[in-house]
Length: 249
Length: 249
DNA sequence: ATTATTTTTGCTGTTTATTGCATTTTTTAT
DNA sequence: ATAAAAAATGCAATAAACAGCAAAAATAAT
Image 1: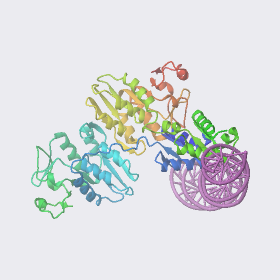
Image 2 (image 1 turned 90 degrees about the horizontal axis):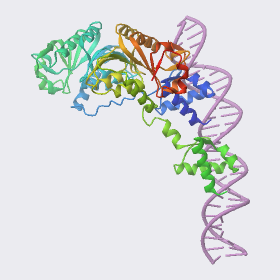
Image 3 (image 1 turned 90 degrees about the vertical axis):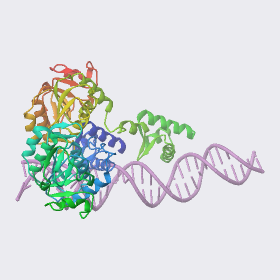
């Protein structure tokens, strides 16, 4: 039997059952376990499947096809996410909010960083599931179609049962005087629950949003421990936020 | 024997059997192995076949059965999903499992259909969030990186608190005698909880999986109310499933 | 027709690839 | 902590690929 045939059979089995055992394959194909192991290793290197201890699993799922192309002000958001990364340490327990800035943070998390992350954003969860050393816990609930996040009473209740070291959140509007505000009542309830579930809250926010406000209030600006924008911390646009207890990054 | 003739014979053999061994051809044509090797090398250069260690394989062999598309046996799965759609009615409350077949079902849901859907699969939830008239509720928990679904005790507990009309599930393996079986213990626990949370369980399963089994058992075949394959319900491959109380679609 | 030239073919020895086995190390589960 | 399973490593036997060469066959030129 040709090597290619064997590998093709292995791929078939993996695609069919999502997961296989090397021993099963070795028996089916009547070759040694070593051969199967080497085949699977090759196929893994070729990105045709993923090798795991004792077997292999299909890629089918893990293909992150949801690569968003059109993110507004991506450059700024990437810069913010980069700064936020510096707050992450091995072993910590954090929360990451929805929104493109937070998604960018999830995307930039290095593969070797090891921590636990709660989220209620589907895209963030998807992105994080590609990070081998991150334990991802999704806070369930009804899914908001536009934001692709869990919302509603159930979500808030679930949030009430956790406590994280850092919570990385976004906001619709932020003002040094009126604090964080939102357009949606529901979202405000959610963010309140998020802030309550965190020892420290980190706000990721592009400078364009500074000094804007809307109808419903999430929290005072003092509830934020660290605010990260794409600006230098010394930038004069941040002056109004300097008299508070906020750390600027 | 002319070179042209020889090469034509080689191509015939390859097309016929999808693969050949150089030694076999050398013997059949009664020429040296080197000659065959050189012929195959030429044909490979001409893109008439693919030369591999020890032989050659047809071009169609790899391109057709490997993942041109990302999803294995997409056609079959689409057909299954189509049939499953007929069970959906406005106002119902359902559950959709993870896996590519179930994802295909989510994808095919028409925009005007209005119902509530629970799921624990991130991709399914993402897909469903694009359907304006579907209320999506995600069952939270720790996210399995491989399958991108919620797993673990919390997930199972959350499942215990709901009851849906229809549950659409996939399985790793299915056998008329041994029922539904899986590779993973955790997954089995999860599926049990899903079945318990459903008034009726619908199994989506491509025929290739019929009469296969693995180590952990999810449920008896009788626990399934409806089984959908890509085959006609009358197909003789389904005979073994006909004496049970299953509806075949 | 004969010779020269090119192409094809088979052979030789050498290099490389594949495979299974034995042993050690690592991972996993109990 | 311990036992079991799996992975990695090194090794040897076998098979295949390759390069170079010379004989044979086909082709071209005179």
